[in-house]
Length: 102
Image (tube, rainbow, N blue to C red; front, side):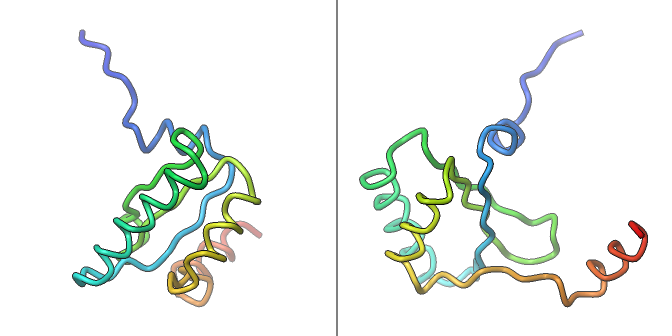
């Protein structure tokens, strides 16, 4: 039986304690903004200090940006205020799941 290494997103989920979801519309302007944001992250936060993955499992077009510190996340959003945070707390799936946890 072949042993496979876990997917990169799963490893990053374990490694980076600060995760933020931003809306990811499939428009050309957002793609350009994401590319610019990735360049900014490499220059200002540093390689190995952040990761980015698509988040299709929540039923939205979203990107998860993973950071090693809250300070890095704050610096990113100060430099990129055009990114809108994903807030699913008002959706039915969230409310239903929260009721099951009681």
